Image: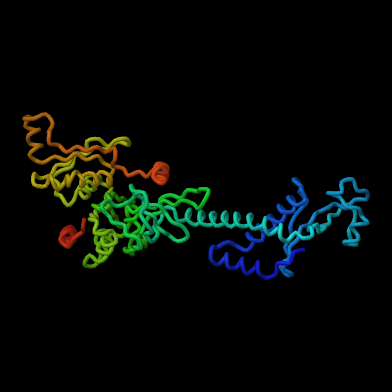
Length: 412
């Protein structure tokens, strides 16, 4: 037997404390390493009956061969005579198994060299599995990290036991990511690699807005107010549709908070990104009217209402057309993502001209390409972009006051 003493236990406790690797993993690795060293030392390729045993009480470890007790030995590697077996244990009988120590002399140095390699690899594997399991549980949730550096247009964020990658497409445009700053990110994907697991995070995902509202609005956490839909263009504007299960609780007012305290906290966390809170409704007309806000709507006509296509025509006053469409079509685009309806916006004068037969279809109608409307996250595509690179609006007080006044008018 090889005397190890208390050093192994102290090392195990330190690894378990620092890296979360259990003592059993270290001891199992040591035993496997000892068996591998024995086979190499004895030039034995196959030895299923060889095992290493560690005695926790004495702190000793040794290599043992398990042999079957027989009357006549035919295979000395696998069998032992009854007479020889009774010298080890006088109570054994034929067909019993006995363990015989076969630890070679001067085996400590050879075993130590082999054990070092095996244990190092096992520790790496155990650490990788621990991190993988931990972040698989965190996938789809919000976490806080510290920006480490910017590398090949990717932002490297430390989120605890590992560094995560925030690819360029998951960053907020015009945002400056300064190393050392704390940042709240969404765990988008976790991929197992030969080394540590690769964690992909996002600072632009719509679920970040959902998580922030759940943290700041108790009614959402309690289930009284529900977030029905979110559409976001990170760094610029977000629309969020909410609905209350309790008629006495105003869903929009709950999200805004007393004197706008709740929404201001969320806007501050999102670096002054503009947020529109609208009431969700089962009535598509009412829902579309709410989603187009802050623009006033004259009428909404449902053109097609099917599973594959939902089209609506929205008519607004002439002076509200640019507000309804938004800068570069942003307002109507977000309304489309929020409601799931393709929205065509026209002014009152455009409709009058069409009805009068002066023009066939308005050339001034707002049309937009909805191929990029849904922000579907393709984690494999992100992964390919990362590997390729590695290898080579403020929500101000006026908006808040305006929205609060609208809420109060609706309540009255």
